[in-house]
Image (cartoon, rainbow, N blue to C red):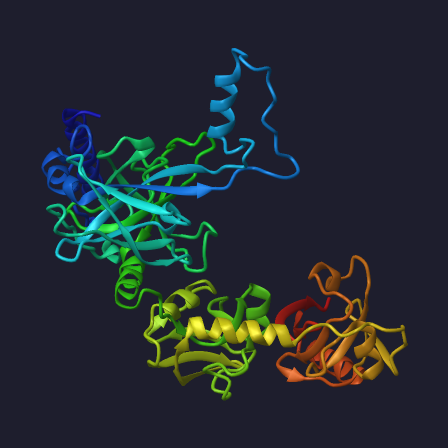
Amino acid sequence: MTSNSLLRAARRTLIAGAAALLLGTASVPSFTTPTFAADGPASVADLAEGLLGAVVNISTSQTVKGTEGPGAVPMPQLPEGSPFQDFFDDFFKNRGGDKDGGSQKVQSLGSGFVIDAEQGIVVTNNHVIADADDIEVNFSDGSTLKATLVGTDTKTDVAVLKVDPKGHKLTAVKFGDSTRMRVGDWVMAIGNPFGLGGTVTVGIVSARNRDINSGPYDDFIQTDAAINRGNSGGPLFNTSGEVIGINTAIISPSGGSIGIGFSIPSQLASGVVDQLRQFGETRRGWLGVRIQPVTDDIAESLGMATAKGALVAGVIKGGPVDNGSIQAGDVIIKFDGKDIHEMRDLPRVVAESPVGKAVDVLVVRKGVEQTVKVTLGRLEDGEKLASGEDDKNTDQDKGDKAPPVSTASVLGMTVGELNDETRKKFGIAADVSGVVITDVAKDSAAAERGIQPGEVITEIAQESVATPKDVMERIGALKEQGRKNALLMLASKTGELRFVTIRMD
């Protein structure tokens, strides 16, 4: 649309609005008049010129052993003097399948950017340099420097490199505030797509807070600025020349840009980069809970007006909240002043918090909001602790089948007492308590929820149960209260907890 067309459209809108006011059919609107350019934003040449020197190409090489063993194609034995000898020599040596089982060099290309000229610090994606034997940083003027690895973080796909700052005059850029970016803001990407270094593309922020299931802290900026293979690790700039994202992934059936690219927001990346520079590793906060989403059914069962927050399905032994400050069944709706709208928000805000920090956590416990004080542990230590806990909770031998002492049928399940016989039958760990599910009727409400024989009901509507009679009484009480769903806390054979709602109609 041309500028004249836009002016004519605006004039028609104003005339129509004035007529409506005169007729008394409209109120005075409050609006901000946008500014337009005929073909997009004004030239970004000056902005790009000042940033190109800070964006680098990353080239890596990795030695891969030859393909020996089953499935390997051997070098054919040709008659001496065969005209095909040179051809086969080149083919098999290049693919690492020569008769000596040799190796080959595999190379890859990516992008990066300098954030500290004095120290020679370069940021890129972890997947760009993963498993590399040699890393080289190539600058826009054609010069090259060897790089050493400072640290990587696989969870956010961030890597920090270091080059000799005396080997080349470096230009640095700085991180901006990605939280201030709005959908529709102009952005510019610079990188090394398909090995074509120093490529500039322009687009807008298409969406924010995207979760593409690539890691536990997904919070991507989506952009339609052209991003292709080789752009990984390159910067996404705002119009002030600040890095507000690290280009990481694309969605493309063809492998080329279709206008759907994703960047790690600077709010997340900058903290990771600081930790990698300081420690060579990440040091994230850790709460020590297992969580699951709060569905509409679960919210109703807990007496919550809306489905929000993260439901605590279990507390890790030896973790920061193993003192009872947070309990299974709590719903965390605010952490350190930050609202937790959905389950995936909690791991990210906890991980961004300093280890050892004392924070306030707002939870809903049995329908009542209350604030608890928690001192955070370190996630990396917690992962080791959780791994050790899982190792201890191994399945026991199943042994011979034996009927439970007493049973009851409820909500499509047959439940029985958890004793030595049923523990042995289903391989249930000694520290699991409750009422064992011995059978689940096909096409029942319980079967729809994925409940399996051998799971143990530990709580119903946040009250403990120990016998089949307890289960029947709790379900009966909920029906008398007019509840449509029953909230069950289930324990696996190894003791891992989860919450499930079952229809009672």
